[in-house]
Length: 421
Image 1 (cartoon, helix red, strand yellow):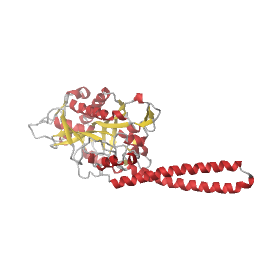
Image 2 (spheres, rainbow, N blue to C red; image 1 turned 90 degrees about the horizontal axis):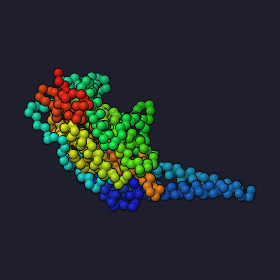
Image 3 (cartoon, rainbow, N blue to C red; image 1 turned 30 degrees about the vertical axis):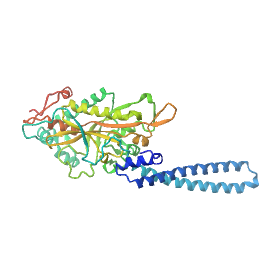
Image 4 (tube, helix red, strand yellow; image 1 turned 90 degrees about the vertical axis):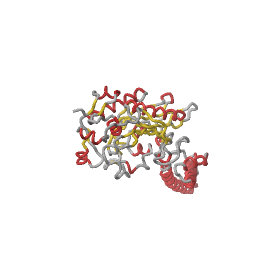
């Protein structure tokens, strides 16, 4: 959630920034009026309560003959307080709902544009692979090795689910441990978080209300299945005041993730690129505000190290403001080359959400003058298992259907070649 005070203290700059994300200036003016009304009602309620309290106290000190009139006056003040509180409650509800729909202010260095307008900053890893045989996609490679079973997963769970079996399952375990080891070398504490969370956690990270159509909810409990461990990691320090000496706090969470993939009908239906359930190692940081830009670059560097270590050719893309999630001020993606699709596809992303999530989560830090300020939060995909598997097997495939294991993964996997008969 953005700081509502910006609409009053920096109206032109705020409107210009949010205009880049398609937010209308007139809508922001309405929000500023709503915030003014909220603050006015808070003052009126406080004043009415003080008057009521004073009147009630005076009754006990008044002469008996005056108490009847004073009791009547106190009752009238009580009614005024009740009306003002009811009006304030309505305004607070509208204020929370409407401000929750406003996206974060974009970083000034984030490029303009919409999906597809990302700016390629550099490539990483080896050169783009040039195969001297017709490339096979990950489905053919994995199914022929009995490492993937889509048909039976479809019978059990429906479309966009998969079984990873045998060497496919072992490949997941190896990739996860490899990614966590890299993250730990960079100071991230490994975490296995809960994946069922309350509404407060989903709202606090900005996935509610804007992404509600993508979220699985339980039928009988007020719990949601997370689409990323970013949610429980961000909520880990919800309602806390952190010691600045303890910052930065850095975590690497491993969890299954669940997404409806609403709006993806007919898109990436083959294989495991876009599924309802997948596993991921997620990097998450709590930092002082002045450190968030540097932390963003640091997280991106870890992602690059992980994929370069897997000898996967990829490109780093600066995502345009029109393609940012609501909470992100800036986002970088890694897009790996997939020979089976003859295209670059996203395999990781990392976002700086500045104080947007922290404001909702009430995650703060103490400062020297004794006041509290909001921390900044950042997240990044160290490794999305299924997409990493796709990139690895397609880029390292050989004509006979076997796959060369990158040297960095051999100690974790215990073999140098996959799918050898």
